[in-house]
Length: 169
Image (cartoon, rainbow, N blue to C red; front, side, top):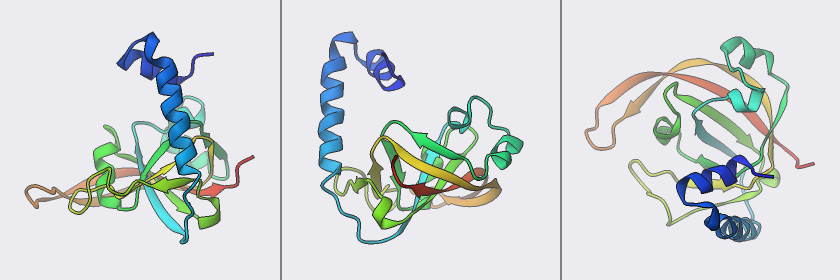
């Protein structure tokens, strides 16, 4: 069975690279399992669309009606400890997950030293595939974003979905 992850690997490389992609994913998941989080965190993850989590439609009404719904991210989920970097990854509609993560439910690791730090840096915490979350709020808000190169401040609309981590099944 070909997953979205496999299709992406094939699109970026070729079919012959699929075993190596699976091996790298397995190695990364193994290393992330060694990480032990000591604090509760608020994490941020930009997404191109919430639709894939909700069965194909993600209007504001759909998002509001999904409060209380459990969703699962089957693939690795890239998150940032700094909210300021999310517009970079939030797609054309500036869509962001705000993730309330109790330390004992965090199944992933901090990727220190492998991504940019400081101004414009991600401070990335990568969650393993199978992360379960419950939608607790959704809405639209305005955020101020500072351009790390020019220092200019822009006000942007942001669609957010607040979730809390759930135990894995």
